[in-house]
Length: 276
Ligand code: C2E
Ligand code: MG
Ligand code: MG
Ligand code: MG
Image (tube, rainbow, N blue to C red):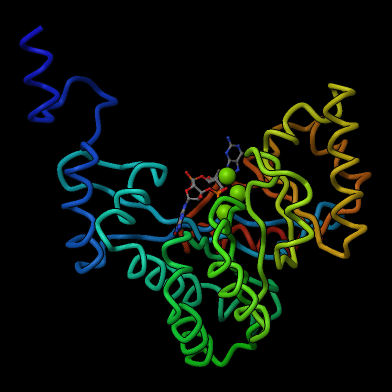
């Protein structure tokens, strides 16, 4: 018992899946950002009919020098608490545009999306940072999509910040829709150009009639508001076949492509282009 307590207190490795503690992550994340050790990987969002890559979602990756790869589900909250989320977000916007800008200019893809945490949204200057990054690449603002979750928009300030980004031309995507406890009524209040229907409402579509019915109802509701729809987390052939009948802006999931680095992405987009 004493042994266990000591392990927890000192954070010593206890097995293959033991990562750094929250406190350790808070200490590591700032210096890692400063050293350029936060990387971006890119998951393609695909037009289900043609197979063309419509856009990319940039996802942050962090490899702790002492513990190896850490899930964003752990290091994003640590970055928030350590006061580093604004820097992480602006870093991700920069990394995303560096990879996406040439692809957008060549007409290979239409957009790149970056995830925005509530804390990053609360900083008014996020809009200025995003605009100057887009300007630096000579990109019209509608090529940048900012993904936010419903929970990150509980404050009126956050909603106002989103309206400003939208007024400037950037696109807002409501991420993980249907994963939380929010009501459908929230959709009326939130500025959203795109809704990303969460894997929870997608998984099993085509084989489970109730899942199929709920997905269609949600998709119809979103479409009736004039909002574009993305389905997330497609993992199987059956799910893909069922979604082909739905009118979707794009689909995303391991079935089509995993998040990948810039080199793998170039190869993937090249292939997708040749096949379509
Ligand atoms: P998210 O924005 O909903 O991103 C999608 C997550 O689902 C990614 O996990 C992606 O790898 C995973 N995914 C995609 N397709 C499938 C699939 O078919 N099956 C399954 N099981 N999973 C799939 P990841 O990269 O671990 O990111 C997790 C979350 O961390 C993201 O969820 C996002 O909320 C957050 N995150 C990642 N990067 C950033 C960032 O730069 N800033 C902020 N604020 N949050 C980030
Ligand atoms: Mg996202
Ligand atoms: Mg998502
Ligand atoms: Mg998600």
